[in-house]
Image: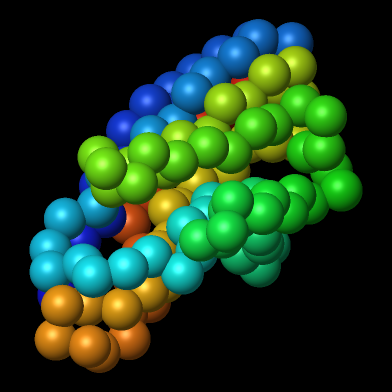
Length: 120
């Protein structure tokens, strides 16, 4: 079983910055992808950014140029640096990881979510 724990959310003024971090634990053999999703009230969960095992990245159009995803394989962490935050970035942000366990089983795990609130 793979567990993900997020940290770094909070309240920030528009134009400010926050950094989210996610630490993975468990019997992980390999990550295929790690990413961040968000869900605003009354809206569906959406992809924010993802980084693959080959270090390819993909971003939602709404965050390109403002957010940067990075990972540390040795520490089993993924981070999201969020700059120039806008009110519409307000949401619960979820960490996601997909990969293979040491038992050679696929996993697709989610964190518990961390609230990001941007005041306008």
